[in-house]
Length: 553
Image 1 (tube, rainbow, N blue to C red):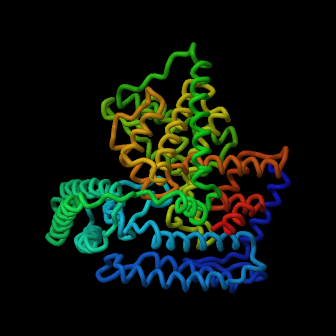
Image 2: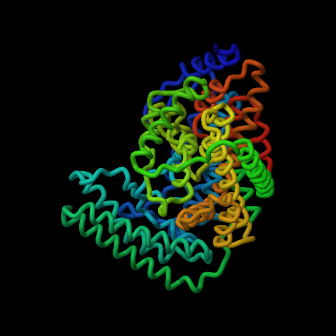
Image 3: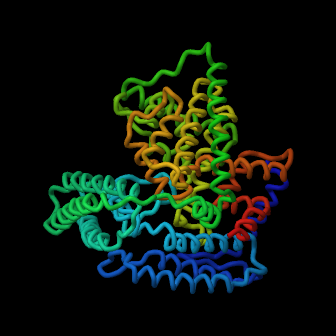
């Protein structure tokens, strides 16, 4: 049964969208509102997206001092145009779009003033990406000339071979420019960047094996890209002894980025307090769950590929049946196929990292987090009507919603009964929460320059529940580097979860006894892949978080 409140919201949504006639990258807005001023916002948004991707000759990104100075000057002009837009009379959804554009401008401003990945971070010049991210776009700063190798099918078609060859030709030119641009002194970023360049060289080797029958133009482009990558790695090694500065951005900058780019209404100190509370809750809950289950047989890992495939299939079937029958999420036809493309595969015990180990005990826990794939499928199959919300926001502005919801449902589904037939699996939920808190806290201390990245890795291992401590160093190396490169990402799983829970509290108090979980998630999905603070404004009408963010410095 739909509540009167939600019936009204649905009717309002339908009525509003009757005014929306959209094609391509623009759409018409309510003619009774200041549609021309909203069109001005869309124009600023579209031009800003072009400004964020400075490209020079031959399609090579240009991050030279002169070009970035010019970008900064243009940004100031866009900020003036943005501030001059009159939002009076706008619908709530349009005002939220306005805040999204403000966040994008703040993201570019922060990149130029503080983060400066083209100057401080050698990993920014890695272009080859072999796997798809489960988030709306890449986690962390990624050059816009990135080569999404996972999008290609091998053997390459004639057109794809030509396209990929053109992309590979950019690598030597960009790496030559990088030797001029990289003047930063962030040692941890430099060390980790060397490793990323080595990985690109290895990936280019693998690509060569997949494309042995390719033409001369492709072969030459690939060879030049590999040689340039190896040479660049050697240059980074030569410069390493001179790099001795901190890589963290400091508490004040971190808090500014949280509030004004990610639109998370917290500070560095508040995130530390929240994660410390959550890690204590995770460890305590884990021990209580173990005590409750003490007379049950322990979980047993699958030992063959056949057992893994059967368990994976059963887990997805159980999850989708649970979501539909218990009316948790609005289930769409494209959701299960999207998840089944990412079931993982059997691995020998000695090769399993933290996540793959958990997958071999019970993949259901990680399949709940894999609602990420539901999000991506929804963005592809049912894109948002707003041109500003239709595609992934830059600077990981989406992170509180994307990682927060994916993490939040791990515990929410458990409380809703997902593991009632297998209580031992509840223990894994608390293990995962403790693990996420440990790596998030470590990243916070790194950004405060209180510990090094190596110490952060040690901290992450130390505060992972004993029998789940990580044996594969590649995972923690990757994670702590990502969180150093992208402020706010490490804690976002837990802080985003908290913001989703707080939103559920606010919405349920508004709706009262007629509150329904499925309606709540339907509303969340309908708002798009935007920060939870803005979703809260759209669902509840409460704009106090955004108002306070805009008042803060």
